[in-house]
Amino acid sequence: MTERRVLIGVIAAAHGIKGEVKVKTFTSTPERFGGYGPLLTQDGRRLEIVTLRPLRADEVIAAFGGVCDRNTAETLKGQHLYVPRAALPEPNPGEFYHADLIGLSVHDSSGKTIGTVRSIDNFGAGDLVEVEFPAGGTEFIAFTDANVPVVDVAAGYLVVELPRYAED
Image 1 (tube, helix red, strand yellow):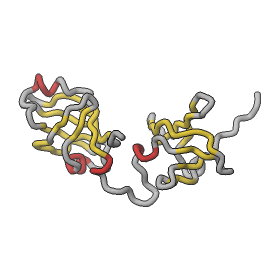
Image 2: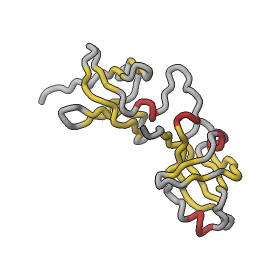
Image 3: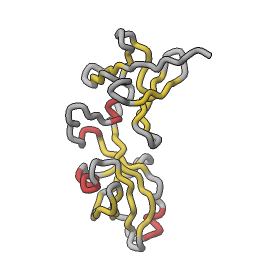
Image 4: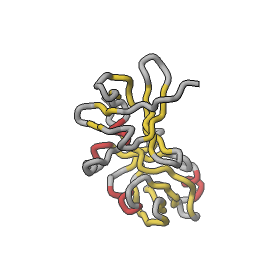
């Protein structure tokens, strides 16, 4: 089985002429970005952080070993940066890593399995659970306590209240 990875940032742009890059982070604070060990890119490269400094609430400036000039830094633009799931601390009660939810079974309030979690997305108005149904198709459900009253990662499922639509 392939080790699960968690996306913790994406390289936004080269920064300066000495090989630094600007990274949009998905960690709770920018300082945490450097605390999980080497980073892995989606194309299989391993990047070691040499220096790191916060820029904004969700951005850092980073220098990676072996990236010594702007031209090399520019080749990294758009790379997603991952760490192994095992490198992250366990979440607090009521908090979840999106990577832990992907693939969980989705039950309705009666306990019937209705699908699986395909993705967790946020298009700007809050987290959404994308439920994939066995017969095909998907639906986005707002990830709220009312719509997703039970999340049991250890047992491998969550409960959703599917929206009810008025008939035309």
